Image (cartoon, rainbow, N blue to C red):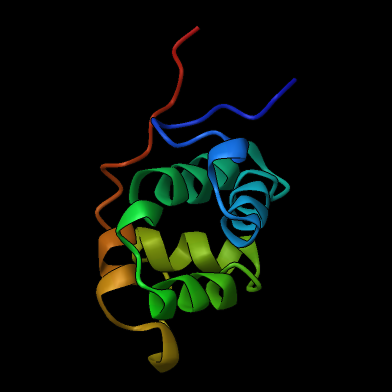
Length: 100
C-alpha cells in the first residue's frame, strides 16, 4: 500500500534530494512515526531553505522514539536541534490521520 500524504507534492514534482527525504519521512518503521514525520515534511518542506533541509536530513537520522519524544515534549530536545523546526514540530497541528 502506498504511503498516505498530507497535502504534499508527489515524488515526481520534487528534486531528487527532497524526493529522498519524503520517502524517508514516510517510511520510518511505525505508522505513528510515518504520520508525524511524513506529514511534517509534506506540510512544510516547500518553505525550507537549504539550511533547513540539511537540518531535517540530520534530524531524521535520529531514532523515531527520540524524534517523537521531542515533538510530544516528553523528552528534552538536544541543543543542536533546538529552534524553529522542532518548535514547529511540537505543535502537532500538521498530522492528518485518516478515519476509515
